[in-house]
Length: 175
Image (cartoon, rainbow, N blue to C red):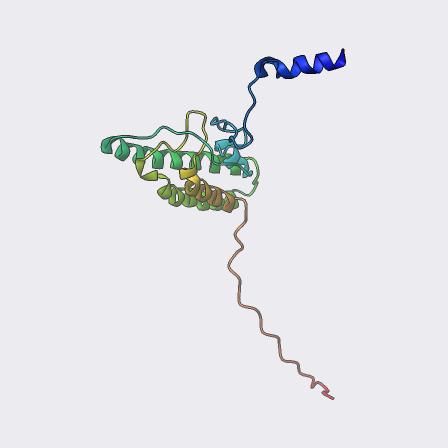
């Protein structure tokens, strides 16, 4: 009986024997999911200075006129992101208004300088439809993140020259 069952299973069609699935050769690459991950670099990860992956899928510009316009729009978007994040980052944390104003100026100046690398030459949109940065926007993301982090670190005041020790009226005994 057991022998008959084994012979019937071996002689059955391969599709029926494997539950309807065809066997996959071992050298076949796995299918890749092209959708961006939940760990993608976005405005949220930029705001929180957290680690992320550059895997956004932004729209690509086809014509020269569209590229010129997109380059300008990308820079403006980066400036706007920087301004909003600087304001958000500094508002609730500092009580000293003078220090807050100084850090705000440093942050805004830094994000304005950083936005210069965000044009991407107009080849694609800075952020995709879900607010994610692509691989090409990595340098922009890093420049903005660096500028934002300068707002977190207080700039030490200019150091006064170190005082020279006063000369003693009493001689020292050197042995």
